[in-house]
Image 1 (cartoon, one colour):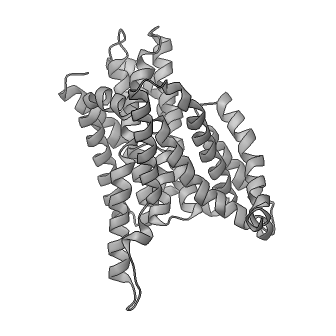
Image 2: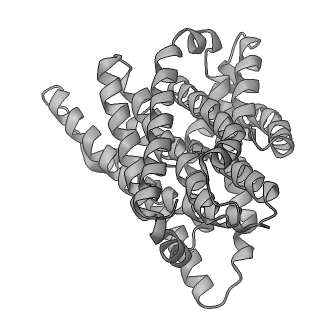
Length: 345
């Protein structure tokens, strides 16, 4: 009862923002409900003078529900299908992820961008946009403003990619009789699932390919999602090492305290899906859980928006935007180069 009393106002406010954001995001998938929720949250937050009554509920939503969203995401992953279909694109995925992380690492130092924002932009650009940021933020102890900034940067280049990549693909000579090559390109060079879907669907519509491009792109995108697992583990180890190195004498820092245990539940959810599908269960039964996962991300983004100072975000957004652009260009270039080297394009 105490939990409900302390949190229901904050959670209720987040729901009031998340529900219309979810509906609008369905109407405009190129933008997506998560970004709309952050923007609405930031605007509404400007008019709330005293956040004390809703503070605990907002914090619970931005932290715990965000982790639940990542766990439920695992129920959409059939590891057998991903490993079988995605192995062709694996060298491209590894190369693009490495490229983005390396660019983010060097620009962090060159432009003196805060480490946590750099990490979120690098991981979000290289793996899967909002889902990767959602998984990484608790591990590196990123605050809501840093998460909002990273999501905003990723969103901007997602929209650009979804709008220009189909015409760009035709211009540079992708095979228009098959959706395979452009599907791999969309799945590796576009970040968020909604934008990958929009980009690949546009290509299918342009050349009457049914769902061929979309199916390939989504499989590649899901394969990229698995990179969340090693990345979060490595980041947890790095944070533990840094805190031990910088901690005051007598301060006990352990990996157990920082370790992203919710990622283990994410893996367990993926294994459950894989085993059940293997024994003949229809994978479509997991669709409601996947939908709930996406809604939880929108709900958490509403909370993050409420906790974000929009004025500060605009003032400090220049350098992360430059980093996002460099990561985006790097990923696009490496994806095209790797496809060319592998004879796919």
